[in-house]
Image 1 (tube, rainbow, N blue to C red):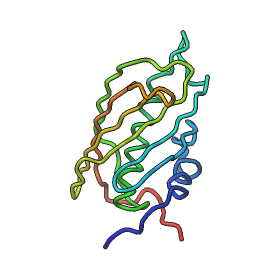
Image 2: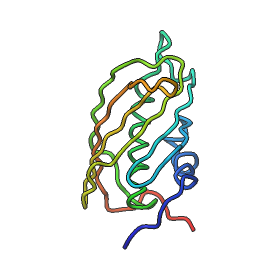
Image 3: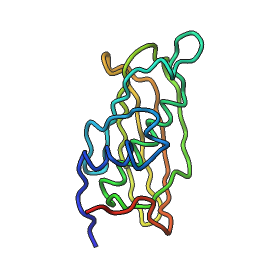
Image 4: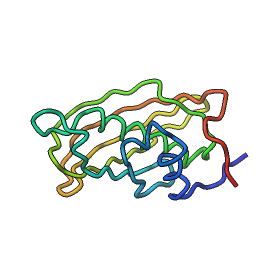
Amino acid sequence: MTPSPVTLAQLQAVISGESSFARFFGFRVEAAEGGECTLFIPFNPQFERPGGIVNGVLLMAAADVAMWLAIKTLRGLEDPSVTINMHTSFLRSARQEDIRCQARVLREGGRLSHGTAECRAAASGELLTEHSLTYMRTGQPTVPTTS
């Protein structure tokens, strides 16, 4: 059974309303289709470390959420996949700037999906972080299907 295509509005609803852990960060879905998803992360001083550097937790969360939604573009909103592994490389600090994070599913298996994500400074496009992620499809749907 092929899942119904998902819309940007549906994915935004998942992270803005139905998913309390993602709502906290204020991510906005900019693009999503065919195993890819791009999030916009507006600068928020709440996520600064001492010295004005954007904290790594924000960038890792963005990569995780972007990959989660990228998988949903392939498997539908009800897909129960969860993160089982994530490797992050921090390449440059972000300071008082908006960020974009793009995730791409590289391999979609029956149980495991693998992909990558990159966070970049929104204005300059400079690479901030690289992430490698693995997700596992669990037995129970995590998000109810809406009509």
